[in-house]
Image 1 (cartoon, rainbow, N blue to C red):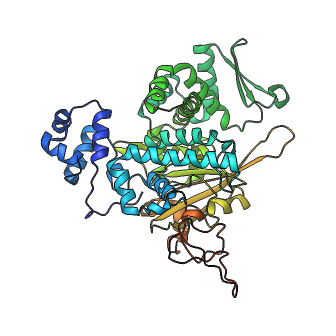
Image 2: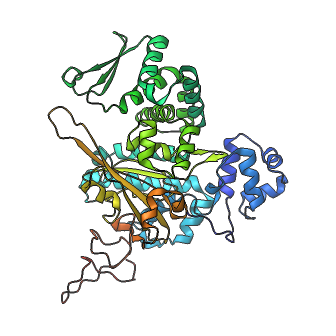
Image 3: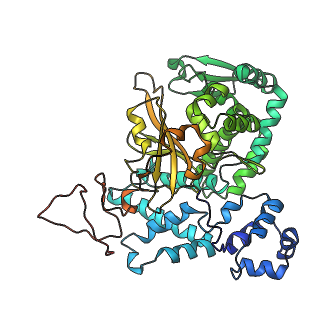
Length: 478
């Protein structure tokens, strides 16, 4: 996330009010905790006073929150969603500008989120009924409805900055109890599952598993794992099952607090929480962040040290948000050969496109052409923010008789952290690649790889010349 301008006034009344109510505090109680008067807090919550540096420090100390979320550009994903909605031909005649969208997101974040969700539901409905060219990304999204469920779950994770101290503590308790070490994880986790829950781990061939990668057999008291699972994925699956058997109270509380609207979304969220726990077991927080900082976030060394996959390491990097021991704020995204987004975290660091394809200039897509090679890139978004992207393709076995699955995975951060990361050394002096969120939201006029014109610009069709960009457009808005 970009560092806020120290001279910029931060008005965060809605965020303050939401935080206070979330903690169940009155204005007087919250004011006491922050060391200010109740009347002053009331002015802050009504955006009649900017949040000062002293109040930000008090918030971090009293409530253990990440004060970066109180920056005016803190929710870049929401602003990106609002911009996309405001650019749609249905409502663009209202001509909502960026200042108005910022004010809406800051003063009324829940109303802004509702507006963005209604627009996404409208887009999905239109795609399902009229087969629009731009569809929601993600598995099953083109059917309408499923894409919204996935986005709800992703938004719930982003709202927690992908950090769950309850699961971190549970993972540390388990590791302390069983003495899990890197070289013996499969053994000790299997023994714990057997001794505590009576399930024995068995590795079976693909034919017997009939396409399943993991199956919990309650009748036979067995955890069945497919031989197709890579070695580093097997202890992960065991830890995930342990979470589902031992952490019901924690998982119930977290799922209830997420406020997800459907049973399917709650189930997906629960699976995500179990996966988070498994990652925390395999890559304990303190050990992992210490190793990451000592090696300058060398992804290869982190894989070898913790005997995990590239994807597991990237996912873990997005979770290092413990107060007092924070790592670099990372985002992560995973796409398939067709460009469909199947996993993403960190919408507060860079905004992701909710619909349509990504930008082919991003090295995320180059990685698909050079599997197993780590590629680093500096890129700049249309708002002028610069980021580091570290991408690699990763393959996994497909169903019996079918080709292996290939995904591109990128992890990245704001360029201000690049000096701390080994993979950025080779590109530190290079100019950033101009990248857009998606063609429909990118207004760069000189891009030869543009697939669609921007939503808010009028096309300029010239029959007498051919330019590199397939679409020409002026500064006039449609």
